[in-house]
Length: 152
Image (cartoon, rainbow, N blue to C red; front, side, top):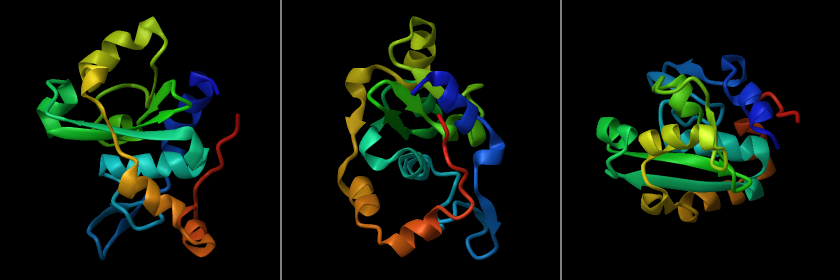
Protein backbone atom coordinates (compact mmCIF):
# COMPACT_ATOMS: atom_id res chain seq x y z
CA UNK A 1 0.00 0.00 0.00
CA UNK A 2 1.41 3.38 -0.93
CA UNK A 3 1.42 6.62 0.97
CA UNK A 4 -0.26 8.33 -1.99
CA UNK A 5 -3.14 5.83 -2.05
CA UNK A 6 -3.69 6.10 1.70
CA UNK A 7 -3.54 9.91 1.57
CA UNK A 8 -5.98 10.06 -1.35
CA UNK A 9 -8.52 8.29 0.83
CA UNK A 10 -7.88 9.58 4.34
CA UNK A 11 -7.15 13.22 3.41
CA UNK A 12 -10.43 13.57 1.52
CA UNK A 13 -13.23 15.00 3.70
CA UNK A 14 -15.74 13.15 1.50
CA UNK A 15 -14.38 9.91 2.97
CA UNK A 16 -15.16 11.00 6.53
CA UNK A 17 -18.59 9.53 7.26
CA UNK A 18 -19.38 11.57 10.32
CA UNK A 19 -22.62 13.41 10.94
CA UNK A 20 -23.92 15.70 13.66
CA UNK A 21 -25.83 13.83 16.36
CA UNK A 22 -28.41 15.85 18.24
CA UNK A 23 -28.39 13.24 20.98
CA UNK A 24 -24.63 13.41 21.50
CA UNK A 25 -24.34 17.09 20.52
CA UNK A 26 -21.25 16.41 18.41
CA UNK A 27 -20.19 14.80 15.15
CA UNK A 28 -20.12 11.00 15.30
CA UNK A 29 -19.02 8.14 13.06
CA UNK A 30 -21.73 5.66 11.98
CA UNK A 31 -20.91 3.50 15.03
CA UNK A 32 -21.93 6.39 17.29
CA UNK A 33 -18.43 7.22 18.54
CA UNK A 34 -17.42 10.91 18.45
CA UNK A 35 -15.28 11.79 15.45
CA UNK A 36 -13.41 14.47 17.41
CA UNK A 37 -11.72 11.76 19.50
CA UNK A 38 -8.41 10.43 18.14
CA UNK A 39 -9.02 6.90 19.46
CA UNK A 40 -12.16 6.66 17.33
CA UNK A 41 -10.13 7.54 14.24
CA UNK A 42 -8.00 4.44 14.93
CA UNK A 43 -11.19 2.35 14.91
CA UNK A 44 -12.24 3.96 11.63
CA UNK A 45 -8.87 3.19 10.00
CA UNK A 46 -8.94 -0.43 11.23
CA UNK A 47 -12.45 -0.99 9.91
CA UNK A 48 -11.58 0.32 6.47
CA UNK A 49 -8.18 -1.33 6.06
CA UNK A 50 -8.77 -4.59 7.98
CA UNK A 51 -7.94 -5.00 11.59
CA UNK A 52 -4.91 -7.25 10.97
CA UNK A 53 -3.08 -4.49 9.08
CA UNK A 54 -3.43 -1.85 11.79
CA UNK A 55 -1.42 -1.36 14.98
CA UNK A 56 -2.92 0.91 17.63
CA UNK A 57 -0.38 3.30 19.17
CA UNK A 58 -0.46 6.25 21.50
CA UNK A 59 1.50 8.45 23.87
CA UNK A 60 1.03 10.68 26.90
CA UNK A 61 2.88 13.89 27.67
CA UNK A 62 5.95 12.93 25.64
CA UNK A 63 6.99 16.49 24.76
CA UNK A 64 5.60 16.35 21.22
CA UNK A 65 3.52 19.17 19.75
CA UNK A 66 0.36 17.10 20.05
CA UNK A 67 1.11 16.19 23.67
CA UNK A 68 1.74 19.81 24.58
CA UNK A 69 -1.61 20.87 23.10
CA UNK A 70 -3.74 17.82 23.96
CA UNK A 71 -1.91 15.84 26.68
CA UNK A 72 -1.84 12.59 24.74
CA UNK A 73 -2.87 11.04 21.48
CA UNK A 74 -3.79 7.75 19.80
CA UNK A 75 -3.08 6.91 16.16
CA UNK A 76 -2.92 4.00 13.73
CA UNK A 77 0.12 2.50 12.04
CA UNK A 78 -0.71 0.60 8.85
CA UNK A 79 1.42 -2.27 7.62
CA UNK A 80 4.12 -1.29 10.11
CA UNK A 81 5.05 1.64 7.91
CA UNK A 82 2.47 4.43 7.65
CA UNK A 83 0.95 6.58 10.36
CA UNK A 84 -2.66 7.07 9.29
CA UNK A 85 -4.24 9.75 11.44
CA UNK A 86 -7.30 11.52 10.07
CA UNK A 87 -7.73 13.31 13.40
CA UNK A 88 -4.50 15.21 12.66
CA UNK A 89 -6.06 16.80 9.56
CA UNK A 90 -9.83 16.77 9.97
CA UNK A 91 -10.09 17.62 13.67
CA UNK A 92 -6.89 19.33 14.87
CA UNK A 93 -5.70 20.79 11.55
CA UNK A 94 -2.08 20.24 12.57
CA UNK A 95 -0.76 18.84 9.29
CA UNK A 96 -1.76 18.92 5.61
CA UNK A 97 -1.95 15.13 5.28
CA UNK A 98 -3.29 12.29 7.40
CA UNK A 99 -0.54 9.92 6.26
CA UNK A 100 3.13 9.95 7.23
CA UNK A 101 5.69 7.37 6.13
CA UNK A 102 7.87 6.07 8.96
CA UNK A 103 10.54 5.07 6.41
CA UNK A 104 10.60 8.32 4.41
CA UNK A 105 13.27 10.80 5.57
CA UNK A 106 11.07 13.61 4.21
CA UNK A 107 8.48 12.81 6.92
CA UNK A 108 10.94 12.34 9.79
CA UNK A 109 10.85 15.92 11.09
CA UNK A 110 7.05 16.08 11.06
CA UNK A 111 6.78 12.72 12.84
CA UNK A 112 9.27 13.76 15.53
CA UNK A 113 7.63 17.15 16.01
CA UNK A 114 4.02 15.90 16.09
CA UNK A 115 4.36 12.43 17.66
CA UNK A 116 7.62 12.66 19.61
CA UNK A 117 10.23 9.96 19.99
CA UNK A 118 9.11 6.48 18.90
CA UNK A 119 10.47 5.11 22.17
CA UNK A 120 7.63 6.96 23.96
CA UNK A 121 4.86 5.36 21.89
CA UNK A 122 2.81 2.68 23.60
CA UNK A 123 0.86 -0.16 21.99
CA UNK A 124 -2.92 -0.22 22.52
CA UNK A 125 -4.09 -3.67 21.58
CA UNK A 126 -6.31 -4.66 24.50
CA UNK A 127 -9.68 -2.99 24.67
CA UNK A 128 -9.63 -1.19 21.33
CA UNK A 129 -8.64 -4.23 19.30
CA UNK A 130 -10.92 -6.53 21.29
CA UNK A 131 -13.91 -4.26 20.68
CA UNK A 132 -13.42 -4.46 16.93
CA UNK A 133 -12.63 -8.18 16.95
CA UNK A 134 -15.81 -8.88 18.93
CA UNK A 135 -18.17 -6.99 16.61
CA UNK A 136 -21.08 -8.97 15.27
CA UNK A 137 -21.80 -8.76 11.53
CA UNK A 138 -24.76 -6.51 12.35
CA UNK A 139 -22.63 -4.16 14.46
CA UNK A 140 -19.98 -4.07 11.75
CA UNK A 141 -22.55 -3.28 9.05
CA UNK A 142 -23.89 -0.41 11.16
CA UNK A 143 -20.38 0.91 11.85
CA UNK A 144 -19.56 0.86 8.12
CA UNK A 145 -22.78 2.58 6.97
CA UNK A 146 -21.78 5.41 4.65
CA UNK A 147 -18.08 4.53 4.71
CA UNK A 148 -16.44 4.61 1.31
CA UNK A 149 -14.41 1.56 0.50
CA UNK A 150 -10.66 2.00 0.29
CA UNK A 151 -9.32 1.17 -3.15
CA UNK A 152 -5.67 0.59 -3.88
